[in-house]
Image 1: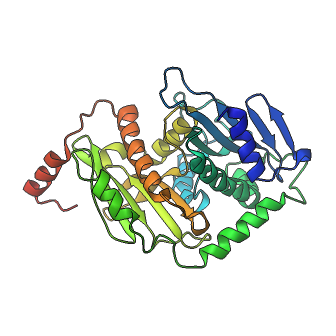
Image 2 (image 1 turned 90 degrees about the vertical axis):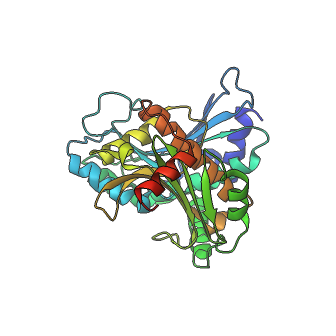
Image 3 (image 1 turned 30 degrees about the horizontal axis):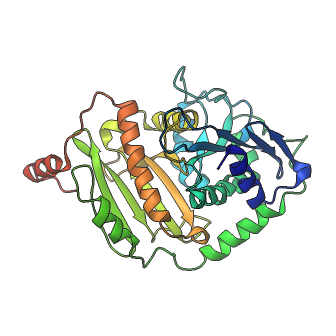
Length: 348
């Protein structure tokens, strides 16, 4: 599958009107309503065995967002799980001078995926999840821009009076299906994943028919991946919540800024795993700001191996953060970590 075929697949699924699209050599720009949605392809890297293309979708909400107050980054980081169910909120962290994507002084929603001709199901899942950023740009875009002290990046002089039909149709489907019990509340997929992938020195886990928890080494501690069907989204209702929580050593004192930095790095780097969620902070029972990546898949997007793919991508993400942000750490084997935990009497 070529880059142009991938782009056509997404444009066809979104039912993009010819009058509201501008094709480019590497993608297209789409005007479904008040904002421009930019879809881009990046060709496979040289010597990459599976010849995967990188797909990105971003919606620019504000062209310039002066992040002058650290408290604003904190507030946004705590609020992002509700605002960003399946995409990231990208902006330059307070006081950052490096390691951020070009043009990140503004504010945008962002998704990415890595696909080839054998991964059509991933391409379609990506297209469906990316629609959430298009929907929320229309619902939340101007409010978020103003929170940043910036003007919304409207296509015209102000908010559009009409929007593409797919925006309202998709939202209606997500809400209707979200009112039903979670599609992942009684599945065998979690136990199958644990049996196949989570009984090794690089990953251990446990599962039941409604959830799964995995641990993978992060230095002398572990990163924790959880998939839960019993935690509905604030407005999308039932579905599957996927979280990756890093240990305290990765969060540090400026967890909110680190979260913003990681969102930028995923937007600007070739990571080999999709960005279908957002980094943010979460206050633990010990009143410590933990660094968490969360994704929420609406009920309407239930499918074979969706949960397994998200679990594997989360494990890959943990390894990427460790290698990228804490290359000084040497990962211990899971057996060593568990033995040390038992000796110290620390539950997990």
